[in-house]
Every structure is written in structure tokens, then in C-alpha cells.
Image (spheres, rainbow, N blue to C red):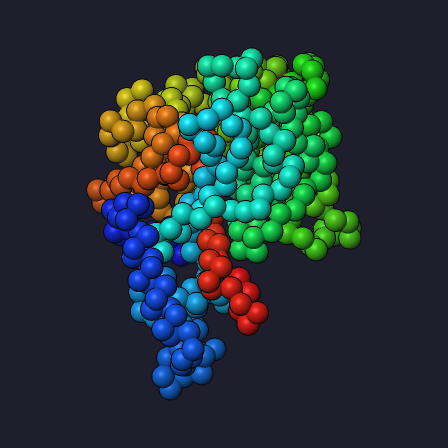
Length: 396
């Protein structure tokens, strides 16, 4: 189980612009200790000491010594959670996509490079859509970031197959080819089931606009009971009743084995196990007034972007419950939940509000986004390994 997204309750109170000097000091300390390797804990073999240190918050280990810093980025240490953003430059007309990771332990933003060439085919700004940015749809599944749909400069589907980024290994791979590549669709995940629904292919089609495809994500080299590679199959699911979900790029929320899909005043629920569609409960749909995400697929959090209120859905009473109200939540564009935190991109895509929903009362902090970038997507995934902690002895 991953450590909390924020083991250090003060990390977001430090402005990211002030971390350069502190990081330089940390680096000097690391260099001082680099050539003087000592046991992790005096009197204990390292493999036993590792088990003890695994129980300590990573922010505490990071502040002690170089050896313990290396421990928290090693494969033997439970990977803590980091924040990942998809963004593009704010000051130009460029559509260049940037994937960045914020490490809450070192308080550093890192740009993920190199990215796959297929991702560079995605167009985010187009003369035909002056008033809006084109979407890039991505989901998080099993600790991986998966890109599913986007638009090319020719206004065609940009991705013929899922693009998968594994933050622990820092590697890119491809998923099975989509039977019908699409854009402006609904995309979501529940447990290991990745679903794309509706949308537009190379041209509008009633068949595509009602179609639903499911791919059961598996880690590489795992096989199903028949000995077939289940990572290479999309399965056709029961179709939608109409084409109303082909008008927008919709982030579908997975929670407790179900996928919740909302488009304006329309709301449907897909049961991953029974493979059946149903109408969303009226109270749930009426209160769904902004971007939403599920915490560990157990609780749905939603931002009422007009009133600036973070709410959660109570399954027992079937009502939306207020968690926190703040003016800065108004106009929220994107949301992610994990590790006890709900992260919300502010209006305009600059600045991220991080709400500790486990605390009583909930606490809100502001995190600066990568300089000069406008955020168009947000995910919470396992941390990456900084280059200075990579070695032939302990690959991250």
C-alpha cells in the first residue's frame, strides 16, 4: 500500500519557487555522505533495517541522511504518492504537451522526458476552436497513467491505441489497438476495467456514438485462465441507448464497481460486473455540478464550480454532503483524489488546491503549478525516482 500523498503536513505551505535553494543544500549533504556508506541502522543487517524504515513516513527519512533518502526511492520501500499534471504553455499557441510530477517529499516539480512520439500527435489548440482547448483524455489504472483519446491537427482521432506510462520504471508502452479510435468520448476506469464509450471516430457515426468498449488492464506478462494475453483485447459492451454522450469529452468516474457518466442533464451508470446500463439516481444527478473523482474507488468527491463547494456523495443516505467551501474552488476545471487528498485545478488551469479531506476540519493548501504551464489534466500516482538516486545497485 502506498504511503499518503502528503506525509509532511507542511509541504504545500512552501512555495515551489523557494525550493531551489533548499534542494541545493540537500544535494550538498547527499554528496558529503555519498562516499561514506554506513549501515542503515547500527547493529542491524540492512534487510532487517529496511523493514523497520518501511514503517516511517518518507518525509521523515528524507530529512535525515543520504542513505535513508535512497531507501525511500528503492524498490523495497512502499512507493509514496505524487501529483502528476498534463499541461501546455500559457504564453504561446503551442500544443506541446508536458507531463510533470510533483514529489511531495522533496517539494520538487520534475518534467517527465522523453515522452512517446505518439503523444506529440495530439492537438490541443486549433483555429476552428478559438474559444476552447481540445481535450486529451487520460485515466489512472494500477499505478499507471493511460492516454486514451485526443484530436489530431486534422480533427481526427489522434490515438490508435492506449499509451501507458509507468512512473516507477519511467517507461512507456502501448495497449491493444482500439477497435474504433475516437475523440470527444467518455473515458473511465473501475478497478482494472478501462472503458471508452460514445464519441466520434474519423467522422460522426450513430454506431460509434452509441458503442462501448472495455479493456481489462493487466500488468505485462500476466495471462488469463485460457493462457491468452488479456492485455491485448478490447471487448464490445452493451451499447448506449442514444448518442447524447458524443458531444463532449467526458471523464467517467469509477466507484465500487460502477462507472458514473454525466453530460449536462444526462446521467447514466454502468455496472462493470453485470455489464448493464441504468439511469443515474435523480438526487445524485441533480447535485452533480462540476468535475468529480473517486477516492480509492470508494467515495465520489465533486466540486460545485459555481458555488465553490467541495462535496462528497454519501451512498447510505444518497445525498451530497458539503466538505469544504472556498471561493478559490469556483470555476474548477479538473480534479483528482488519492491518499486522503482531493486536488483541484483552479479556474484558468493555474494553481492547484489540495484539500486534506481526512483532517477534521478539512484543510486546504495551494500548490503552484509548473511555471508557464496551464494544467489540462491531473492524476495521483506512485512517485518516480529522481536521477540522483538511480544506480546500478538500486534501480527504481
